[in-house]
Length: 498
Image 1 (cartoon, rainbow, N blue to C red):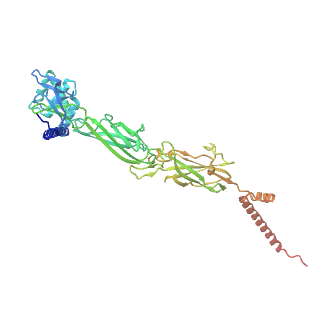
Image 2: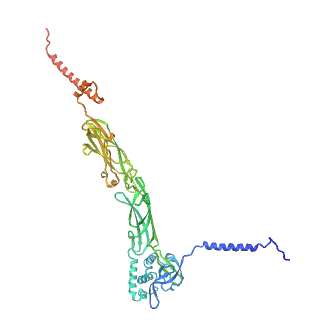
Image 3: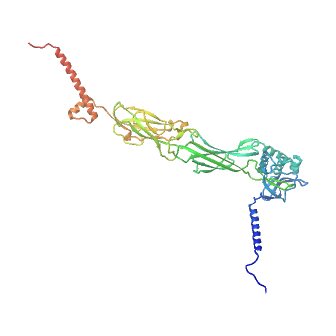
């Protein structure tokens, strides 16, 4: 009878299975952790071009991913049916920076063409750079048959274009500026500077689109981010009420058709590698920061007060000005300044023009504007050249009795353009405000005052009492002088005695 033992099986088979599973897991993990190889693509066959009667091809090659390219290994085996590894041409350490610039220009410009002559000519231009392998340009162009002359001429034009101004390029950089016009208004301007083989040059204005962001200001649509084109100015408006604005900006362009970055579909030794077509891959960025006076206008306002409420004929009166900043949509909350970027900054100067109007027979009624026919006693100006604060107008002489009223105005025309004229908002005071009104009392004649005092026995007030007392004293003084003269005359006559 066979006995069955429970719980005493040998442990090694299970342990071996566990070790094997761990080994498989580690192997899989190792595969996952390995760096991914460069992408591969198969060569599908010939693209656009010509085949000679004896079977030689000149033109582009087609890859399985739909792209086309040009052979760079003249004399090697045709790439058709082979797996090719895509790499950056710089990794091949085979071409100089300038030759990569030429190859990149060819691939971007002509590799995708559907024209036979263009494709064949671009292949011929490529071989001129990568090596003719003992052939002449004429013999290679001859593969195009009766179109050989056109292919050779076109290839020569292509080679000349590579080295011409705005031809092949090594790199591209972005330039960014926030310009100021004479009024102080700002605009963002992004440019592209291309390092062509023939020399640096700016890219054609408006040819390329990028994305710009700004802080401290907004674009015309109120946004902080905007699509921009190179060489085109975009107005900016400060988004703060401060008199000085800190502006930062950045711009980024992508997929630019410049530079010497180009992809090669690399084949195994002995097989032709292919220079592949593709859109521009260059990118360019720029950023800047600057500080400058705000381009927004500001609203000067003035609280005014006449130096005297009551005055006398012939006296002088001036106006006391409290200058400040008013709140208004689209303006700064601070007094405007001017100066170069980064400072120092100076307050925008304005001029307060003051007119003393009168006399009026009665207390003027307040109004937005004075009567058109109001007489003008005098006109004075007060420079406001230190920003907000208290200023005093020059004095005016009061010519006669009546009510007189100060009125003031500020106009941008009194500020020089280079000192911020475009940012000064005009201001005008109201007419007839009590704080601006001066009452001038006419002095009464001494005789009239004596008659009135004799009739009433009192004066209307301190001013009139003073006038009456002064007149009485003068009259008494005159009487006393006359009496003294009479007495002296009588004293000279002989006494009439016994």
